[in-house]
Length: 137
Ligand SMILES: CC(C)(COP(=O)(O)OP(=O)(O)OC[C@H]1O[C@@H](n2cnc3c(N)ncnc32)[C@H](O)[C@@H]1OP(=O)(O)O)[C@@H](O)C(=O)NCCC(=O)NCCS
Image 1 (cartoon, helix red, strand yellow):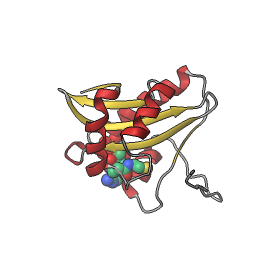
Image 2 (cartoon, rainbow, N blue to C red):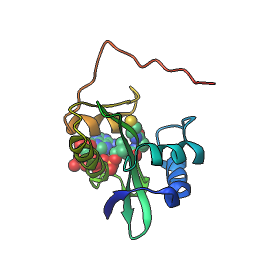
Image 3 (tube, rainbow, N blue to C red):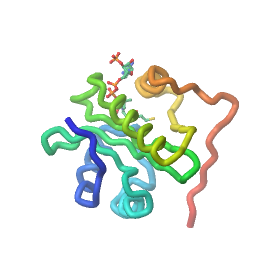
């Protein structure tokens, strides 16, 4: 297994993985959304690649100030083998190289696997705040 940067050739496989492995769907899950991410923040899409099979992803977005984790997802057949930990370590390396000193991730309160993963990697729940979103026209 290697962790590598994703490219436009990966978009279909990434979307297939997210459909079966991600925690819910997002309006940004689509060829257009990923197609905009790749040139905007090259290197943000990190992929766990096992002999050409895409088995995990994380979007490690960096705005030049902070790092933001999205779409951490591991193929159900490959879980509990350290893949998410390796993907997040690669994300942290990317953020550090870009000068970010703070990273955040959105985690559903009832997602026990994700909570356990972030917890073991040193993240702490930011209590007293909630995420506010709206879709743009
Ligand atoms: C959450 C997820 C990414 C974890 O991926 P993973 O590759 O299995 O995680 P790792 O193997 O790196 O686990 C690291 C540690 O996190 C904890 N952990 C991970 N999954 C866990 C689970 N289901 N239950 C309890 N602890 C868990 C354990 O401490 C684990 O170490 P251990 O296996 O030595 O005990 C994976 O379950 C997944 O893709 N879930 C669906 C998508 C999702 O919820 N993404 C997160 C959105 S915020």
